[in-house]
Length: 92
Image (cartoon, rainbow, N blue to C red; front, side):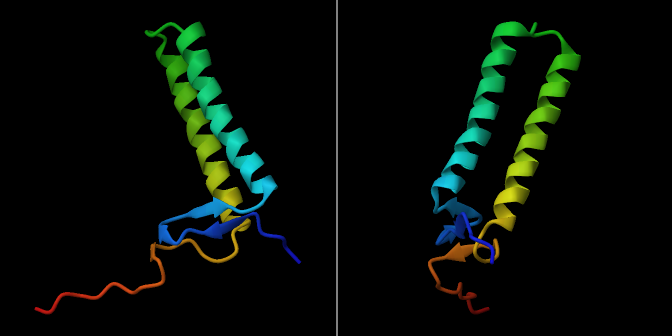
């Protein structure tokens, strides 16, 4: 039986951590992105296009991995939610 680390959000799209493991994974992903920003600012020349493209690819990979991982560990599907209410269409 899978133990879920995230639960679907009540409002909006996505999920939120509900266990300490979910919070750790979220913090590590955020720290990786924030740390890479600091490294790029301090160590890489602003005109080095190759380094910036590699950095963008790294950020995209970390983001993609985090989304895929948290989706697999979420108790329910990711979809737009508005606290259990259904949106009503306006009459024409």
